[in-house]
Length: 112
Image (cartoon, rainbow, N blue to C red; front, side, top):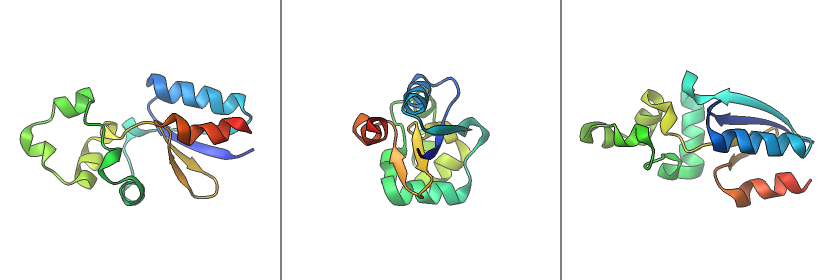
């Protein structure tokens, strides 16, 4: 099975549920806790693939931002507030990124 890096938060219910389901399907899962920050190259990959959809504009973190902060470019927002990333994002060993926050994106990995 695949080796998957799950970018999420340790205490995020969705991240934990996806991790558990992937492990049950036989995948090796490593957690990359976004609270520790995101590398700029990874932010660039996220934005190239998902665009601004990777920003969680319904989160508590977003609601606490000032109007000036909300107007910042997405890359700067993710660099300074990595918890704004919609979670989880799955990085597969073949280089693909999958939006783990979407059940239909995770389903093929669970089917085996």
